[in-house]
Image (cartoon, rainbow, N blue to C red; front, side, top):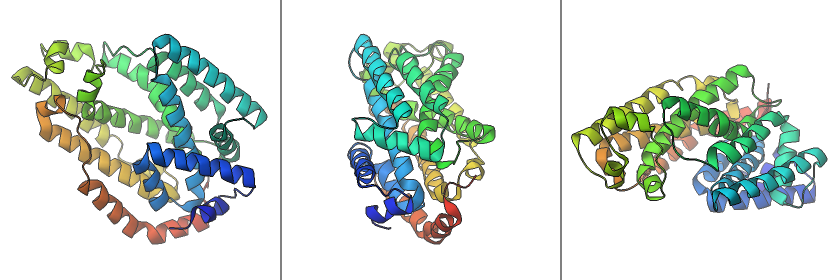
Length: 314
């Protein structure tokens, strides 16, 4: 793995202030999201790493603002953040080193700004005011408004000029699966925080109440509901087959690892059954380390070749 200085140079980031900005963002991401950061550093082609690290940093910033404080505070803070982002995109500058790095990445990679606008708009509506889902249609609307644009504001930086329609549609399928798995794996923690992330209509279909879930009742109806949700997540994960064909070569090992870990976590949810209501279902330690080691071992030569072919190929 090249040093961070070399990684910045391979990405064409040369100005001292700009290099400091990307370094600031990388350190921030490492503190908040060590697993995604280390996955990028270990597995992605070096010329892609700074751009994507800036994308993760921006995505985390918006998520944090959208989830902190009262609804009124969230919306006010998101409006202020949107103003700062718009100014940074217009001028190419900002007092915030994170925004300076991100807008530089957006300009350098040619990511269309509507993805960023949609993400910020969705943060102020779908996320800041989140009150659960009545139906599957509400869940899909949440993906379209917030989760999908948020992913594209990050993962879209792999493509020079932004994703085409087929690539964007592939990532829409990916985020559908990722969100379903995440909601199931974090069910206990979300309920403890007052968030119910399963559509209420499906609870009614199984004659399950919110109290049943909050009190972690291990009943046949609860087990049937969770099994049905896991099957939906499994079908969504199966629908992501082919995502590597839509991914830049230098990011193949990262996306393959993300997909494998998502499947591992879903399998753990399936095994946990009603136990997922008592505590969140994590990856554990052994499986991620094994997956990373295997991916790292198999990726060294292809990654070197991908970097030489030119990360950011269209």
